[in-house]
Length: 112
Length: 114
Image (tube, rainbow over all chains, first blue to last red; front, side):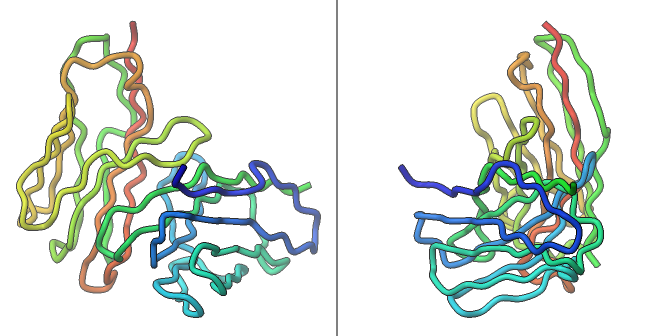
């Protein structure tokens, strides 16, 4: 059953804590993306990767970090430097940059 | 910088009505335009993708058109059903400063009443 999985579904962060969101795909896509969605708003690009061991900053990369050690995995770390992390985080993948993107179910991050 | 605007922000219609959602973008140098559907608390589902060389795409009761020169796209939903209730997002791929990244509009929240 091909697709994109994200875990956990809900994540709670304490002040000063780093947390990592998981994204895995078995679609054999080269490109992977992380987006942030705030209530009533569209998606904003955090980071993206078009190939293993390479990634680029999106529009709102400050306070976030990523790695791409395997083709199928693109974890996102929300660091303590991100002062307003409460949001819905969506991971996506695609075969080429210009082709359609397939989205995971999302992770909702809340601050305690 | 590419900017995408969707009008209206919210729409409520009775079941069976035909409706049009609008999307406009500022930089016409795009590779393609996509329409997505998002249910509350869920990820996005791709509905239609129109390449820059195409004028429209159809899937079932959905028809999307693209006028690249004027920076506009419309999503037409025929014979709307309560199950169509969701947020519809427009996204463009490309633009002189956006490269091959997607730029999203803020979405139109559609409610179809039985």
